[in-house]
Image (tube, rainbow, N blue to C red; front, side, top):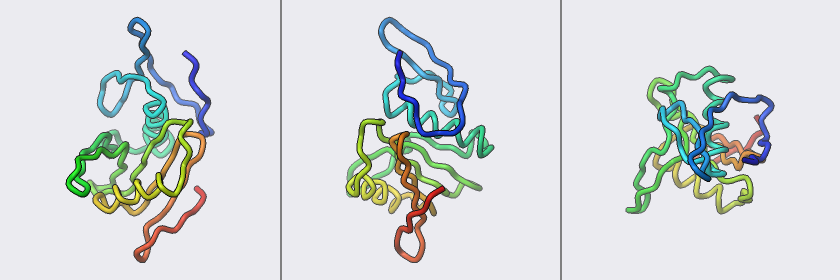
Length: 142
């Protein structure tokens, strides 16, 4: 199993298992093994980052939350909450997916439903951080 090195300073202690030719990664939020897709590899890095580096409780992290956007059911990748209020929305893409204005707009549309103060669009190699202030997104480096 060859996984790309992602753009995180930290290294995390992931749990893997294999069933025939498929690999799975343990998700500490959902407490189960999930199919190891490129997008899941990115999401698990962010989950471990918030749990170990930022010291959030597992209960503050929400994955795969359903939202309704323009009558369609969508799922957000990761939401970080504080006192049950949305704080950070993280939209994960596979490492080979380019982060474009179009992918950022998708994240912003999701956030129009969620209402987090900050969004992160990431493919694990590049991370775009923006804070919603005064009716617009302001981009910054973290």
